[in-house]
Length: 203
Image (cartoon, rainbow, N blue to C red; front, top):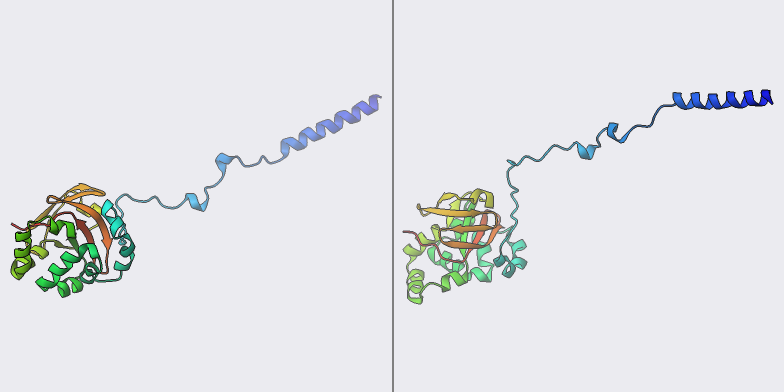
């Protein structure tokens, strides 16, 4: 019996020694970071994507057409949107369609049909019949550079007409002078378009 007890004690001690010399498994805290954890942080100062991300309640009326506008120059793109047909007519009467189509990187603030209809009939007819005045008005809605919403925040912009526009607000809540952006950041081949609920009038 003493011999059996001795053998049992020796076996137990051997198991304890083996356990004490085995390598411990890696702890979760010591695991190296995976490649997905090592991607560089995104800088808040990174330039906005060149692709537009249209926003605003007014986009619902033209959403089906927005994708088709991206490959067209802005003068042509405007003419493809029924809700902008009065502006397209104004651009044609002013003789500015080619200039808009060949311009490089511009932003167009585009009054919708309701904006033109809000003008008194007599004033609207007078404007549409006066090419020189119409040219000034249309040019007042165009600025250089493709402007993202971030570029427009509380900005002062010089127009092709020569005078300035004042933009207030940020994100998807923007006003240009006293006009509200109802659908913004629409991409075309050479321009970014912001649809307005009022016609902007130069001084």
